[in-house]
Image (cartoon, rainbow, N blue to C red; front, side):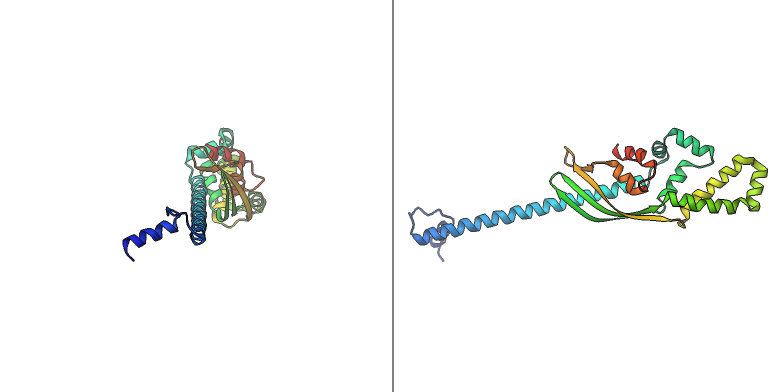
Length: 230
């Protein structure tokens, strides 16, 4: 095909011919316009899919980063989670707040099952598991009663009194949590997220994350939610 013929063909295809045009010309124009609309629609759908995929990646990274951060809090952050009064009470019983917090996370695991994005809002479906503190306390009663009758416990009491016995008993509880030989819970939860004014994704309700970590009944959730929200 010569250059002139190519230009004429392209002109007809894109409706740029100077001729008034026959019915065939109009048909060509209509077909070209329809193809253009379909192309634009496909491009928009591809762009939407790419944008949604980017959002899902950002959300997954935010969830992963948050859980990683919470499982690796330093001692100062842990004290903020528990609060000064609670930390003092724990220490008076021989419990190291930081060691106890680490023990709480020693059984934590999660998987992201689904992410659904709707504009500037999203929901994340997760399966989470961790130590069941309520059940662990029940189990510990039996462990403590058995241990209290050992010679080790008698020696500790004779040498340091009730305070020393309490401290040793609480350390036994922390060691039990860290051992992995404890009752755990597994639950499917939903976490709501929203896009901030800066375009990043954040948790709509940080307390939902705390509940995912330690279950519904733990008083730690409120303070931990504050840390997540900072």
